[in-house]
Length: 309
Image (tube, rainbow, N blue to C red; front, side, top):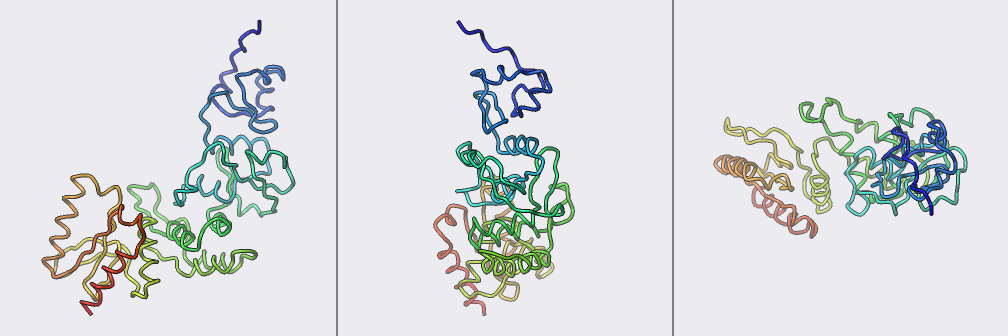
């Protein structure tokens, strides 16, 4: 009759750890083979039943392999970049993408997809545990995984001006010019789409849907709108519309899920009333509508612009 495994040291309990970390805590090789531990890759273990996160797995692998760093979609998720729903979350069935300057454990592809590239240290960011490609380098690498439109979305995310009171920072992650230079300097597959995306990045979008709507308007040949710009007319503060065609007196507000509260709804209604009193046109695009594409909202915007030329 087998004995129950002895408890792990407190330093290892409930976390992903490496063989070296186990040995340094006095855990034997025999203990690592017990049924309450699951080997993720060679030399990396997780408690059976532990709910893994991508950050935990990457952190353990970075500790195991000092030259490794997260890249691609894995780095994007660690950075909190906006991504399409299909790749925006991670599960254990999805391999993490890691860079390494040398070949490592090619047989571990079920958990890790290794990429073998040499990047200088300025393009690798060192965190408390995880290492990842810098935000700009991650954006460049995502050309292999995302459409040009989503590269613009992420570019807009990187260059937007943060609200210091809400985000704890007062500077954007990157400048438009920085993305343009990086795209021009990059080489290899997907460069044409990346460079085109860099040219369409703008400061001002506050959400992926705002960017995608702006791109749909541009694709339809509509004039370029201002993005989240203060709007004052007739001495009245008309807020900061998501998209604004000031000379036409037309604006667009995208109602995401944050607009569902009664308090936010009432603020939106009062703002729309002020705009109407000043003779302005407000077009609202709702979250549910956006899921079916942008043709209907763009048609309404185009009609309003034509009528007020």
